[in-house]
Length: 269
Image (cartoon, rainbow, N blue to C red; front, side, top):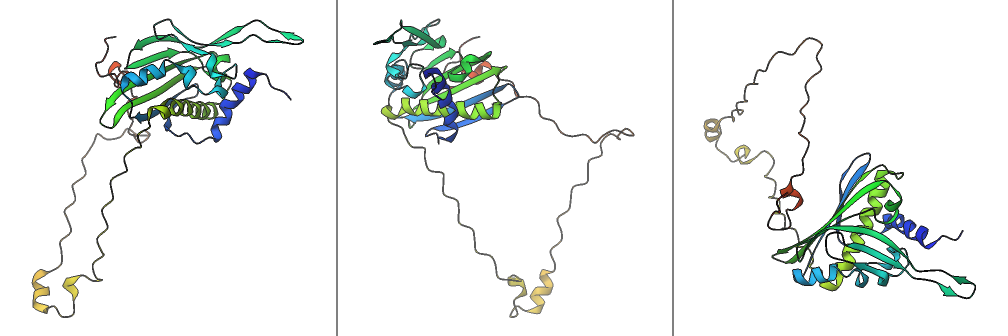
């Protein structure tokens, strides 16, 4: 069965499940109807170079994840209300003729040059679902170069199973970030610190039980006293028939500082 270009593009998002993302990627949260994908990479380029590349998706966005099959048809207007859009070229060939079309991938809601870009929209197969997707790309200077954090938060009713679609979307987001970062010079993550070597185990029985140790010395040393244990703290008596209490954690609430933590100066809400 032949698939249209749009169907092929949607199918490629699901193929991403089998692709190992080259950037640090993770689905950091998932519920029955929402998920958050977070990817991160450090590059050697300056924040200005990262920004200029970011707003030129035709130079790095992967063509297999476009509706037209060619990333050269992508444009992005870096201002509020601007469009991350794609032109669908006209077809003029024997026996077939079409007019040019277009597709909106996302709409910009914030643009902080050299700091952050925020867009709203359902990417790929999510475009057909009544969901809201918010993509925040934060740029910040770090000791090793420039860090790019790419976070896509999706929520709403969808016909896909969240455990499946979240992993597929996360994989594609990692591929797109890697495509952006590669020409900018990806800085490898530092190696984890070396673990200290384990000390050799003492001889069986310990030095105090050596055969050549004087008996008097052993007698003076005596047996070690067990450490005193803290007395249990008495609590209020349980009500008859009540279930045992279980500790609960308060639900994490995102603050403005959390969302804009990579921007340096926190914008006022």
